Image (cartoon, rainbow, N blue to C red; front, side):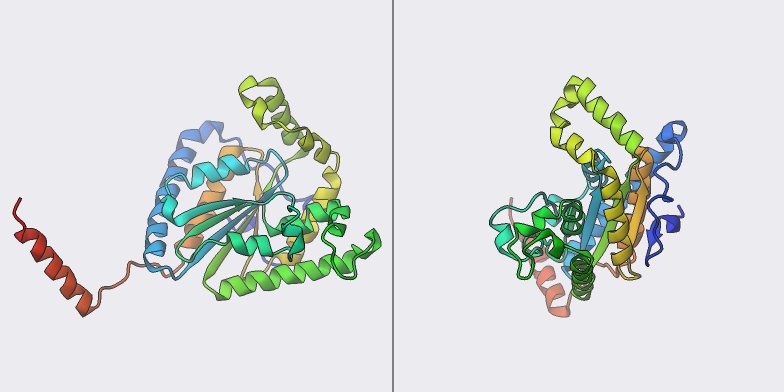
Length: 292
């Protein structure tokens, strides 16, 4: 599968031109599900090798508007991964304790160990997305030199983009592969999914009045995503903008990208030293000599 069209490595992203729809998966759903299942298995196998050596870690970032399918995407694609080497972190509005620290403090606490896959269901990018739409949130952080909304300006966010680029570069140098996905859903599809949550009793629990309030800022969020992706897409840590109106097709694209990127890592089970091989031989013989 050719996924280059979804990859951005520099400031050439235009959210208004990025598609939210590729094709209707209904006619080829069985084939798509089969391919996803194969990708899930390959991710599982790669993670076993990664965990055996603890040299590399993988951070998968998911950003999206509400109802774009992040939760179901994570649940499906990583269904086969051993929980020992897998963790999911959700980042919502910072708590009072988190606001007393730098904005990357809570991210560092949630980093997966090398050898593991860590998924960020929303991430440090919230601090240049939600905070850009609602700059009043920045004032709660009690930052030096930021006392009024006038201080939460272009220069402020340019500084944060620089922080993020440097942070991702730092993580890459320390053995982490960062995979960043923006699930790009249309406003019309989000409306349909919200209606489904309201009209279907078993989905009522998914609905939040806050989702409707944030929908009123749709254009501002689109602008914030456009700016953030352009400012932080690099060759080393690109952004993948995934058409998300069709959930199965979006899962196919994301699972394909994750599989191919992880398999590019030099993963292998550790080789035994002569001393270790000797210990294995001794243990093997002891077990064989045991009496039932």
